[in-house]
Length: 126
Ligand code: I3P
Image (cartoon, rainbow, N blue to C red):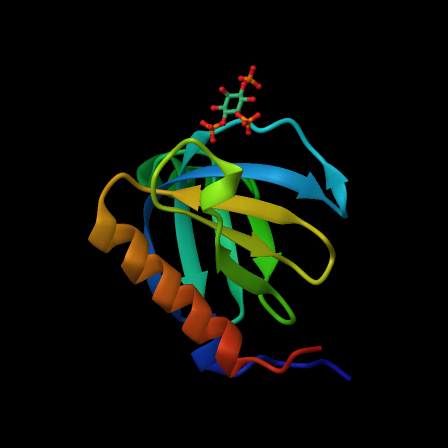
C-alpha cells in the first residue's frame, strides 16, 4: 500500500546557508572538509545542497539530488571540541552519519540549533 506523507511533513521549516562538514558516513570517519551548503529543514529531514539556492533550484529539474538526512532517531549537540571554529554543532543520524554545522554569526547558529532540535524532539525515536 502506498504511504502518502501528510503535507505538513513536506513543508519547509527553515532554509539558509551554513558551513557544513560531513565527518562520518555509516560510522566510518571521513576527512573533514568544510564547505558552504544551502540547507533546507522540513519536519523529518534536512537536505544539504552543494550549490547556491538558485543553482539548486535549477538542478532540481535535471534530477540532481541533494544529500538528504533523516532526522528520526538523530541527535544534535554542541561540539566545541570537534573544531577550532566557533559555533559548531553536530548532528548524528541513526545510520551513523555525522555532520558538523557552523556559522560565525551567533544568532544564526542558535536559530538553526533550536529549529533542528525541535524537529528531532517532535519525531518518533525509531
Ligand atoms: C583540516 C582543515 C579543517 C580543520 C581540520 C584539519 O585540514 O584545516 O579546516 O578543521 O582540523 O585537519 P585538511 O584540510 O588538511 O584536511 P576546523 O576548521 O574545524 O578546525 P581537525 O583535524 O582538528 O578537525
